[in-house]
Image 1 (cartoon, rainbow, N blue to C red):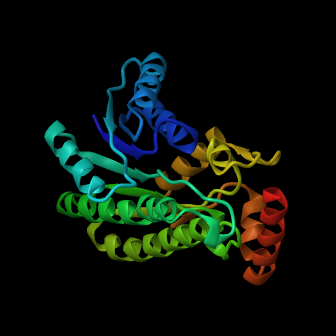
Image 2 (image 1 turned 45 degrees about the vertical axis):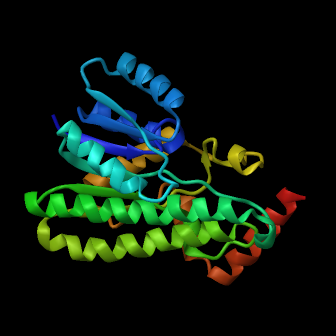
Length: 252
């Protein structure tokens, strides 16, 4: 059986992608910082896909050295990861100087450092096999700065840039690296930020379908929905101002 490793797999886009891949016959390794949520997700996956092997690994990827620990746990299980999905992440809304330093530091590690280390480790294995795929989850936030969401937007810009670069490197080894840039999605993301989910948010299941279809077609950048594609080509200065107004209004 082929296996996919999905971080941030217990809710939102993560569990939606896990379901799409399980439906296609992949065994799933679900990773999250919450054992309780992992156990609930596994129960749901086992019920939906009784013939699919599902592993759960508790690991907080917002902590230093966590990515290496996760990699070593995978090795101990004896699993070959055919698809790596770097999905785990979160955002922090508010004026930059008022956001807690430790929370910002955790965001930076989870959103940027952990995915980078996981890519490095699993790319080495994929290069040896001359096959494998990586799906890094960025965002349409990657295409412009985001006042009152500054660290999150910047972290997604990093993932977008890093993923495009390693895609170029990986081609010679027959390995695919794709970048998913969803727009506003109906997940717990906004709840964690402390703001209301916008009415126009796309369902996570639909985003997941776009994501795996794009991965199978080896698209460099996967942008779900026509409106998000149009949004990408709007000048970044215009989008920056629009984001500032919207976020400031929501926070007030």
